[in-house]
Length: 331
Ligand SMILES: *Cc1c(COP(=O)(O)O)cnc(C)c1O
Image 1: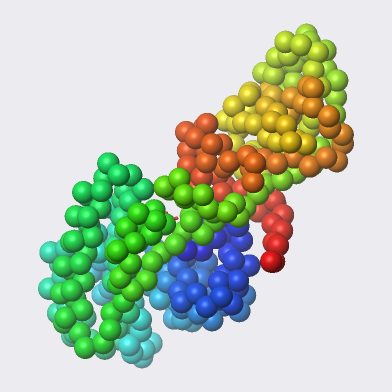
Image 2 (image 1 turned 90 degrees about the horizontal axis):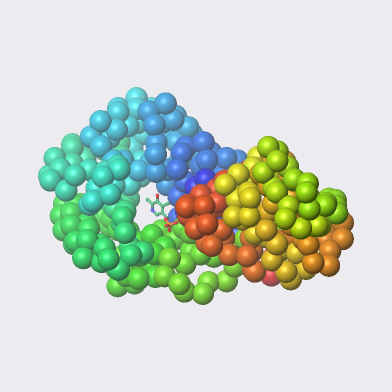
């Protein structure tokens, strides 16, 4: 899964690495993301999960394979394919087994088979569904129920056609916790970016690092930052870093909620996070201008950071803005 700029890490670099390493399929959310990958030289199959009517031409032009989730979408896609004289265009059927986001309902399978058999513009390449709570043992019964509905639906669909139809249902937590249901493919997302839903120790993949711009000695009665929020109770030393909420450092991490690592020591963010900067309380830490600051990475867990502001690592990762330079290391 390389949607949302490969979870913020840079979709073309990640996709090129995946293509080189013989990954079979990529998936993106919208057609524009797929077109961008084609322009970067990605030739492997790309599934587009949220195709919209206005993007059909882009799909055909770049040979992007749509997820088809409703009869309305299917009919208009077939119509456009016919208009362009296209045959056997690969599509991916999404079944709603409990997420209730997108997908055909399980009782629509017969109608779907009839419709697909009545034309030759599109051909089903895969059938898939999405698990809602594979990370949580509390939902294991529901997960198994989703899988069993999926299995029945996909059996029926596969039996109706002569060619092989690929099946896939597992996301990252599903891959970790339900390996017996891999079917033909799995859809690895967050796990690829180093995070486990299951407490498995995956290797850290992404770090957000910056450097100290300026260090200040600030007396006890002063405040730091906007709205005088960073109240000092002691004579303090602060460090200013050039990362703010416009970079994806959530403003909720201000006022001691967020912490960073400087020279092996943990230091809290003091005061409100600014648009382009944040101030860190480094009292008692040996640091100088230019020293490296880890916001998340090998030492500072992105999951803990997410938890401290009531969100998930996905949102932190995908929220790192474009102006933050991505640097890649090849091993
Ligand atoms: C995003 C997404 C995934 C990957 O989810 P992770 O939890 O990141 O592994 C898989 N399938 C679908 C349909 C998705 O939208």
